Amino acid sequence: MSVLLFPPRSSPIGAPDHVAWLTAMAAVAVAEVVADRIGRTSAIKWPNDVRVEGRKIAGILVERPAAALGSAAVLGIGLNANLVREDFPDDLQDRATSIQIERSGMPDDRSEIAHELIRRLDCWYEAVVREGPDVLVPAWRDRSEHLGRMVCVETPVGARLGRLIDLDFRSGLVLEPGDGSPGIHLAPAEVLAVGPAEERTGLWTSDPSGG
Image (tube, rainbow, N blue to C red):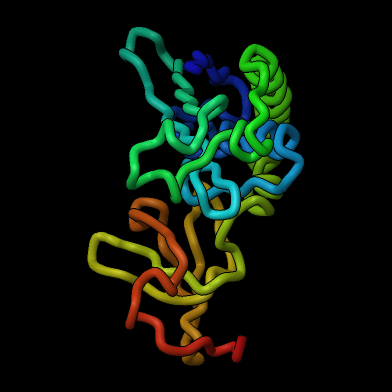
């Protein structure tokens, strides 16, 4: 699905750098729809993936068209709906999923999914236009997949390890190193990818919390 929006310049979101909050808005809307459809929790993986138990079910891409369209932005949303495991390439079958798979093989009505997604987007968009992007933060943060966990953050200068103790789609991430040193703040531009620390064998040898 592609959704064309024209954020009003007179609103709290009138600044031209609205890619971050639009990505967060779409991720929250998709995560809510997925959770309702499958009856289980869905999570947001920084910055633009929606996942179910670690498997990707949707991705979001925000683009700004030609300058002639002013403040226009396009939300590109790819949501796996009626796919079975064998529809994915072999290397993705354990890393991707769909609404049908998560509904124990029961297909869903794609038109209903699209209508519900548009309703959720409308609701969040009206709230953000009225109150500003801060209204998104609690819903986005609460669905963040790795909050409170040990993570490996890939940056342009290498990997950073620590417990993810805070994050904001505009200000970035805060990691707790676990060695008594102050928290590490990483701006969004510094974050290339976020994943569980255990996926980086040998980079994390102990959990400072004892967990």
